Length: 570
Image 1 (tube, rainbow, N blue to C red):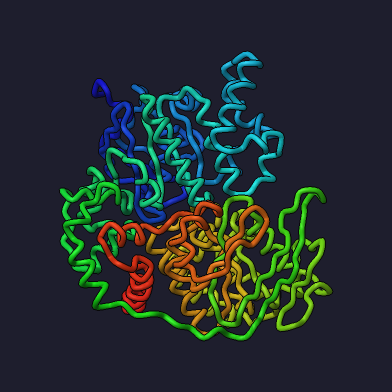
Image 2 (spheres, one colour):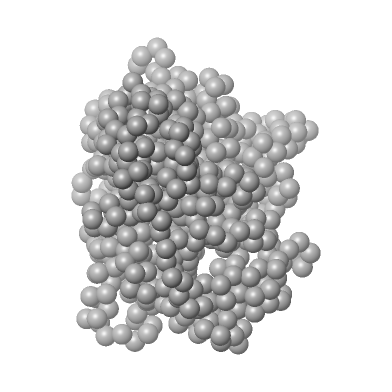
């Protein structure tokens, strides 16, 4: 093993006992002490499997056949113990629920310190300090399972920050975080890396990860490394989209303009990108393609009036909410973690009852209806797929709702297969759900609701953990559904999704609605972005750096042009 190499794969392969083919093939990869590596690639390409080999979950928790060699901190992993490896590698899992141990946030953060027998007073101070850094000091006594998805992810992050492990592995750390909290998380990870720790990040949201520099991007596909190079080289190559990874939006805009992108222009970050070299290309493209979009609003379909709700009867979760959803639109509900977005969806579906206010569908008060009766009008795909899945096999899960409705077997088969193809799951139709990754499970739950075709479809973080190809397939399917009259509400932290697919955005912050306007206008309003923990789109900043006189118009131009490109591709 090289002197400063802390992770060394040599001709490494791995095959789960439950699978016919290996998940990883001939991996040769060396990670040096203090390096910060981003592992990217499409869903199912082997990223999480690679991570589980590093932290010892493979072969000790997930059994299979190993070929070749993997050394972590000098230990051959197949002969080391999980205990010894876990002392060297701290992990933040993609599925936060599977990582919690303590009965409160404080207990969970303190777990590693308790194992190291740190004195209680020192432990309390350290836990309080770390909870403050990740913005969870007010929830320190709460049960972690009662938190929002983004809050859970912050607790998981805090749990590894207190450890002394020299290697830290983050598997989709941004999956459930609002844009601003995700930005803070990347800054925290960068600070951790600066303290001579080796950091490995597995993540789809490339532009967000590259908010802080990484040393290398390792691109995987079908269990093989297809590129291992500095970020500027990877982004200039144009290879990412080919392998199901979304490149930063400012770079997509630059390519649309016909500009030639080289690694010397340092395109990995908008801060370093030599925009001055391509500003003439951007101006020409904008002048040739700018049009103002206009869409006639449909009739009012779902209306929320004067809605009030509190979980504890003291602190309001939602107050004075007025929202109108129009027939045939696709809109987004955005805002910071814990703002009340998912609570609003739960109220619409009847899972919980409001303290005050009225929810109507085509003027009909929904209050007297049961949850099952409301399901005829409103379908919801929850944020955590594990909360929705009730069957063992994929086909059975997606078919369940149709069977309950008494549909004929042949018709069920036809509808289920159609949706499975759209969601990228057809080849797995006879698989058990337990064999799927978190992102694949998410697609199963989306398919199980899409197949029912409700009047209003609500999706809570529909693309979290999805690669660009599957993201595009799902969103293009939703777009086509929407064009055929399906009304769709998307609760999302994904600013790309909000910008590219929804015409209107409802912004919720600190329990109140603070904006209801065009999606691209929201992401070009710095005050609104700050208030709701959003992120100003890099397209707006690109336009300003290129000297475009109307940066807002440039963003609108990109949206229309990009939609045309995607419609042509599909």
